[in-house]
Length: 295
Picture 1 (cartoon, rainbow, N blue to C red):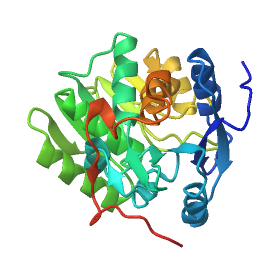
Picture 2: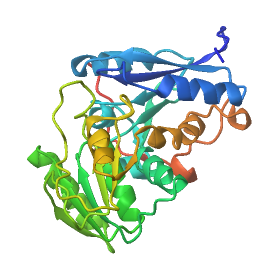
Picture 3: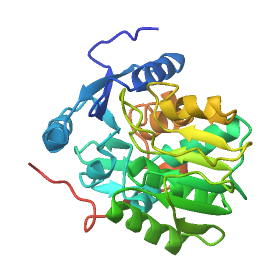
Picture 4: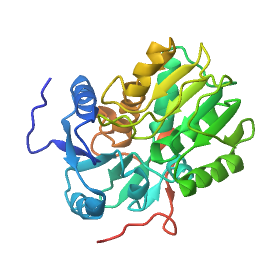
């Protein structure tokens, strides 16, 4: 259903580079229509060097409810938030920013919980599983924290960027109590139950394989966070090897409702409400770590 746009419509933008691959407009606008919300989500193609300029402009627009953040801005966008929810602060990245009445941004991260909830909806458990995660950026870090929270048996983390990899490993080891967190390679082994691609590799035609599946065991599940194409090269190869697959759309489908609620767009919260983050938590003001930069 195409939303009817008028002067009272609340605007949500999704910022990415590229942005042609995003599925958020269809999913969010469908959810807005189902809830009878006067809101619309539209895609903005924003390069990394223009992110601050765009956020500075959007915060001045009173009928902007917030922005959804996708590749490659999830880590950078956290720096523009005056407040972060506990999950976003732990991960160091956001996938959405809510515009507060004074124009300040409050950041939250729902990628991790969306991913594990998407797995659960398809009958896949995390607890006790041995997992390979390739990609330690914003989405990868969020997924990693959620996997540790759900008590995976082990988590092998791989990223070609040594700083991102080491930062995530350090954070997870400080946080994890029941999960063995290790440095890994972009190669599945016969011990892995779940193999996850959290890199953008596979989004464009001609991208190399992000993970070597040569030694993946039968019975392993291969997941990709990329939403377009739905069947990435990694998932296609997994299927040819007889492995189960999990598409990126499941993450977004299981986080749309939480993000809409975070933007205070539900009818029960329309027009205001108490400032809350994920799971009803108060966002943590982190003026010393996450602050708004004017450019």
